[in-house]
Length: 111
Length: 117
Image (tube, rainbow over all chains, first blue to last red; front, side, top):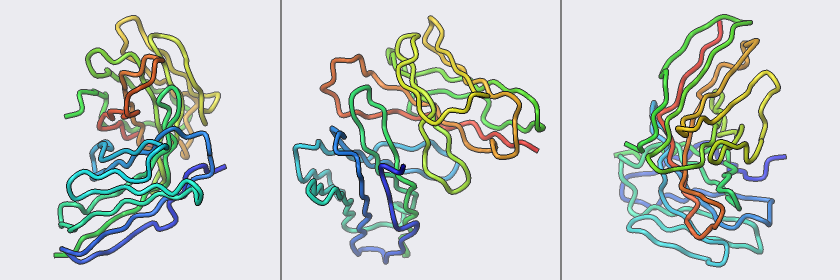
């Protein structure tokens, strides 16, 4: 049972444009959601999070939107930069900080 | 640098063998988590330890076991290895102490890449 799904395995965007990465979940018990970024040969690094009681959180070029009724969250990156090229994982979390990750979306930002 | 250290970084072994992966969490973190990432797959939660005790179990095979020692480092033992066990194994730590209130962020090590031939 995949509780967190990222249906787009890859996304290609032109530098300067907006990147939108999507994530769907089924577990209503998640207390918060996080996005992680992963470069090759490195561990995932935390990018941004959102509490389940909020619908938006912004940090610089990164904004996460949460639609609880649709069980959907998205990560917007504006403007996209070549250095943003990486694999992005969304995750749902609950008590104990056990994170359930999606399958990841590979973002390629073209110069 | 996340502060989480994993060794070895790379490991090549044969089917049927046993290996041990080691993880040192960030200073002060009591919780350690193990995740597996197979080729082009997401991160699959294996097991969590909090202050030496098993806290949560995920999709961990019976051939795999883990423990967290008094100094808070953790080891993941993989035995009777099969070709399908080839994967990246990540350790993560957090300051979670059961009281909640934090962002839920986990800090990941760089992973141990296991290749079973």
